[in-house]
Image 1: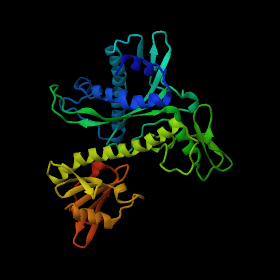
Image 2: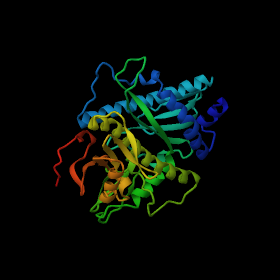
Image 3: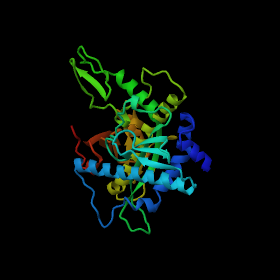
Image 4: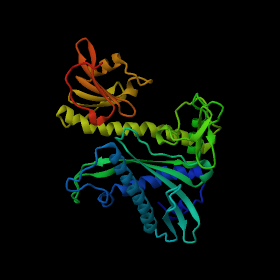
Length: 367
């Protein structure tokens, strides 16, 4: 990467669409490589049988801690990259006022360049609930970007003797202003049925909803990163190049994040369930459907039906074709159903809301 190019883009001197593509194709892949280097990973690793909280409240706090450290490491990698290119008049600053965004590029005179809001998602989390609720009035359209890091634990051999350390699986970036446009458009066009005589909208500080004429701050799904927009939504804002790119990127992001988490869960659970370490892909023709280990498999519900409801005939055919005796079918938030193949069909033998509840069960059908 050329120093002149790095300076131009980080200082905010290039248009938003070109900057977005540069961040996606050149800058973030470079940063991810640095984050996944053992020198960075050892700063977040677990050592000497350190335990991770299992109860939901403390597990959320723990993930927030990992997210914060990844944010700091991202800032550190930006600074290292600038120093490697001998750019001494630009630096990455932390926004200590605890408001949007998290990080800013500035020069020595204090002039602003790009600004980054950083979100981190653990791939196997059932509810990937990072939030983006900043109002559009507080977003600079040309220079503000949302960066999302998808991570999970990786147990690997290293000269630094950790038990396991976070590994960044992927990184995504969005123009913050157009992502907020999609979010607001989707939310405003889906008001609740019980508005009464009120309205749903925004005041100068936050989103406001209404129930039976009573107004309150919206604290539901507004701003949740995986619920900002729905593919093929009936009402679409008038687009421009950046907005169209953001919509396409967001749709790909949602699908990829869910699939990567599903893949991580399959490789984590299937060897324990089957007693066989090897995990391979399940294909239906040329279409990838899931993973298997010995005679046990994981499938995504969306691969069996567009509606997410399991098509039992298709499931039975895939199980026969892939020589599977048992499968776990997971939905987007990883609620699961456990099926067993019989001579005359399939039976549902267990179900649960969280992957940690998955286990081999007796062949007793559930209600």
